[in-house]
Amino acid sequence: MSFTFIDLFAGIGGIRRAFETAGGTCVFASEWDKYAADTYEANFGHRPAGDITQIEGSEIPKHDILTAGFPCQPFSIAGVTKHNALGNAHGFEHSTQGTLFFDVARIIAAKKPRVFLLENVKNLRSHERGRTFAVIMQTLREELGYYVPEPQVIDARVLVPQHRERIYIVGFRNKRDAERFGYPAIADQKPKLKNMLEKKVLDKYTLTDHLWQYLQNYAAKHKAKGNGFGFGLADLNGTTRTLSARYYKDGAEILIPQKEKNPRRLTPRECARLMGFPEEQQIVCSDTRAYKQFGNSVVVPVVTEIAKAIIEALSSRDQLSLSRKVASQIRFDEVAPAFALANATAVSAVLIKAP
Image (cartoon, rainbow, N blue to C red; front, side, top):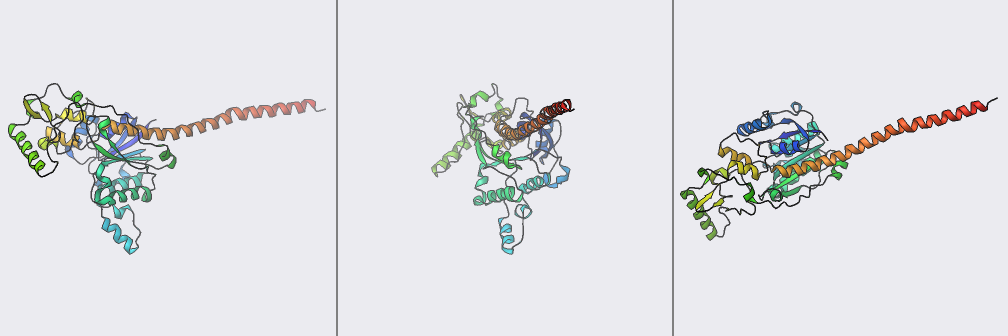
């Protein structure tokens, strides 16, 4: 099935790679960060549009699927309460204005895609004691009128050697499409970190004696206080902690043990692999920016599985429509002529018998 999609809050194109793998064509992308846009352009051949808050819905092409890994920002719950108390009608323009989710909502309202896929951190559910999530779901279901199956948190560790839980929200304009959709049951591939490490790594990625001592002292101090803060020495036969956008600071959450040497950071290429990017992914910026870009991205194989499930739900409907169309044509092209022939035979018989 061929389809079109747009890539909002595009980052370096992780979601785009997934949906292209599923057979889609990207017709629009938006990313405000200059350096992420540089990486996106190097890998996909065109530069994304800038700040989505400055782009009108009318400027965005028609598309089948909207995708967005939007940042989580505080919602004005007090504003919603005030409008309720005054008895004023209000929609997402009031309840989400000032947040980046508002821009996702206004584009869905303007373009009415068949499907949307939204991605965010697992804690979106508990943000503001669950009120942020409640506003988002109310906006998508009640204000925008989409059928949204229960969102699902998926841990990427079944496909890549990284513990990374993210929440995915899929919504359909058509109820039957939503009923046909199911989040993929992804088999555990039991990936191992050691299988994605580079063979030769420059010395610059090894921690200095000063930084290594600092991290050990920091961990010991917090352990004494009963806190869990500290560095993460990775299990080469297992999975890592979550790669974050702050990895460039000291690499503390994922350190690779080395024989007779201090631990080292991951290289940017290893970060790309940890996020499921293919080897052809071009890294065109400094290590510091590359760490931030991969830490902010999605795990490509996970989104690919979700994309395939979405397309399967849509394809089922399209195939059903096609089958009905073909059946209709059969009735017209074959059944009707046969019926006409039978009538013609009967008329001939009557004429022959006539005196």
